[in-house]
Image (cartoon, rainbow, N blue to C red; front, top):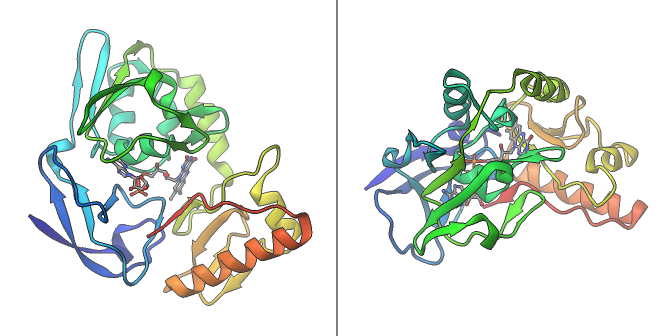
Length: 257
Ligand SMILES: Cc1cc2nc3c(=O)[nH]c(=O)nc-3n(C[C@H](O)[C@H](O)[C@H](O)COP(=O)(O)OP(=O)(O)OC[C@H]3O[C@@H](n4cnc5c(N)ncnc54)[C@H](O)[C@@H]3O)c2cc1C
């Protein structure tokens, strides 16, 4: 089955073409060149992307077992956070305003500062079966999980931590409200991409209708009607400026599709 998606509405940065996307209903072998879309919160989609696929609603579920939480990879972060709150389960507080599907969040090992989604993860279901956490290489904003993540098993810790939630709420205070794809670049070791961007004068810098936010320099924001070309030009200029001034190669956190 296919679904037509307007990526200028679907993605968080509100840029992208209208394309047909294959809906994945069952665990299967995907064509090699297919790009898997989650919630589209970390993506910049070009006018001519490769073939696209996404998980169907069949993978949107939360099931509670005695000591684990079993979550479908198409489940949205907000839904899991609400569930954890309602059922007094700890370990999911970091999902506050961390947009995405659990599949995308686990693949990216998304998180904030030293906290990340893999902290209380037990295993993930891929086409090859259940992969234990100890056999997965989770690194800063990345994992080596190959192929599609269909389901995830988390430890079930008793006690939703409202103090932790407050900490995450505070950390989000400097997050721009304009459409973005989150942090544009990964933080280089022992430094912050935002700091370097600010020092080369890119805080608030604009090309067309895409800019580095004046609230948080590492957020690439769409000011309204921004285009893929504007975004790419600005990204390249920023990388060049930081490389020239600091000899640091800024690595992309957002995925260009
Ligand atoms: C306002 C805002 C704030 C943000 N704050 C943070 C933050 O604090 N910390 C942080 O880490 N990120 C942050 N992000 C980025 C984003 O929330 C994360 O990268 C999240 O993991 C994206 O999930 P997604 O489902 O939208 O994935 P997508 O953006 O759709 O895809 C991201 C990657 O995951 C892969 N993927 C998606 N689903 C699956 C699956 N089922 N199986 C295997 N691979 C899959 C895709 O192929 C792609 O490579 C923010 C984004 C926004 C817009």
